[in-house]
Image 1 (cartoon, rainbow, N blue to C red):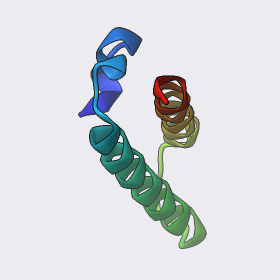
Image 2 (image 1 turned 60 degrees about the horizontal axis):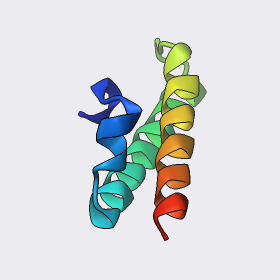
Image 3 (image 1 turned 45 degrees about the vertical axis):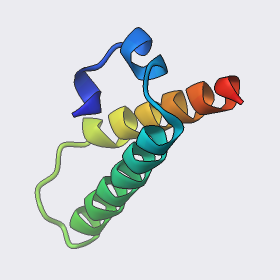
Length: 65
């Protein structure tokens, strides 16, 4: 969903959209950690990708307020 958006599109999101997306991404990160712990095959680059997107969204949210 939001992984394909650039920063100008991310800035247009409302606070509730940002909060929902951050929660969704944190849940996905948790699931990735769970897969890693159970030694399932994962794509390691997804950890960094999701963390960066969470940070970007939270930065945009703090700039708005």
